[in-house]
Length: 132
Image (cartoon, rainbow, N blue to C red; front, side, top):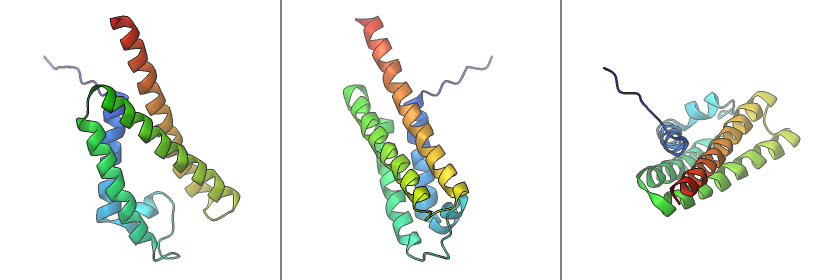
């Protein structure tokens, strides 16, 4: 009999951060292209991509292994980071520094991450009230 698999939003976000981070660290140009960016037009994108990747791996890993109030606090940090990414995507679209497709992908990914983080916090509060 198969055991049902349950992936809570924080674990999913943490694993997603690690996967995207590894991609950005190991193959920054390829990862940039996946998100609709043009690394050939900006050769410094590889450098920034590797920096981004290392931070995504670190935030994802530390959140993944944390528990209790620390996990909640790291989820809030993740929401703040993803919220800043969302705002930056909107700003870049307004300034026409990225294509509409790239902006849509980047803003969509950030908005999804913010939403998942907020959902996780709401679920945590409900569980806390039920236990109390």
